[in-house]
Image 1 (tube, one colour):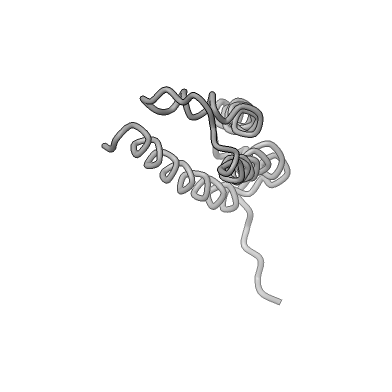
Image 2: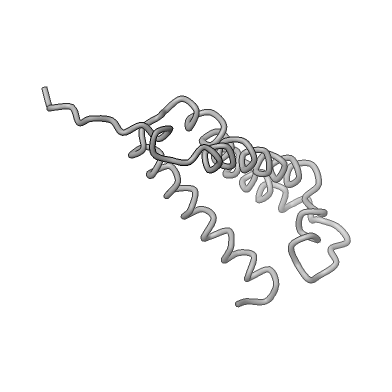
Length: 116
């Protein structure tokens, strides 16, 4: 068997306010975003662009469902997995995945308002 490395607990390393924000506040806001893109995609698009969107073409509904699905993965990571796994190495990997997703999301918002 391979030697096991000592596990550094995230709860011992990360400040409690950071863990609270990530596992509670951020996951609630992300879940609110999931609900918004699934229930009211028109409001979502209007809130994020400079254009007034009168209606959403039903042929594009799948895009909002995909977006909601991606965000739901983040909600699950923050609200469930990070509560169950107290290993700082795993936390760093999960936070990197969320950061990569957020970077692309931020770029898409710049595209929505006409560029950087």
